[in-house]
Length: 436
Image (cartoon, rainbow, N blue to C red; front, top):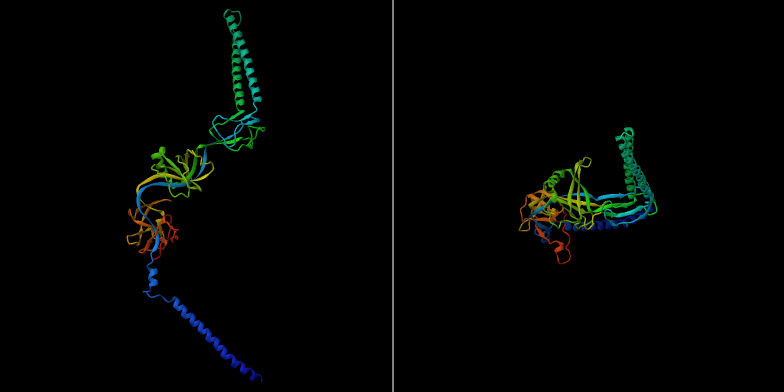
């Protein structure tokens, strides 16, 4: 009975399974046909393929030109005050007045503070009185000496007594000179009660308020009144690799008195002022404007063996006070000027396994790979000594997509377009050499 019941059920299930198999096979067939149509290569005479194959690659170009190029060496430096003086009391006593404002510009000799002078004035008066007393004794001894000398000449007294009186006069003369030295010392101590500026400069934050007792011998340094810094002129100490030492030494020998210094921001890609002689330039970190121009002052007398660098110092007038002690700046040292050098933008120079090269655009807008030799390169310009001639058009942007013989379309820079900015051209400043 059970076998008869199961046989119709199995018979009904088989057609349903066949339908599922056929449906699945149909779906797979359709998918295969669609994939074949999608990935089937387009015929060689297809308009779509011709369109993509012949589409020019957009690039930006620049023209190789001859010009005078200043040769700079870049370094990082620290601004230092031309002079720095920590104002401390030289005598002990109560601070009765502070005669400067914080951040005030002061002149040499200007009164900064006053310590109670009464004790030192009394000491001066005491030694002055002592000198007057000794001078009176000296005057009397000289009169007695004159008297004894007359008596000796008339044989009314012994020569020994006259010699003793002469020795007493010499002792009193020495005592008067000692009194004068004590007066000078007391007068100097009294002058220390009036604290004056030793240099022209700018005061910092006041460290001691009036009413406090200050001490000359204070190892903790709490009796320092203020720090005075000279900002005009000001110095910048910077370092360069020791490989630059011959060029720097040669520039100093050639035109040290006429050296120029230019300070500009790190983000600035050019110097507006022309520089035709050797000199120093500095770049203010985070800024883009010319800060100051000065002169190279010192080349250190030894190379740091731990870092392989040489230390230099430049002085700047700092008329606008844009340089501040302790600040970090980028320094540009002008060591030479290349006359009538063939130049291209640094973005045009590419580097690959076979060396340095550029892409040159001919009159038919075809890019040609050209090997070249670069003698000097900085943020602004690359000097080419072989491989190019004046007037050659080189690719500055989009070189990553190029190969020798590629058709290109020269695009205008975004800044020169009147409409909305165009999409950026693919390819970086330093493209990699395409694989053959």
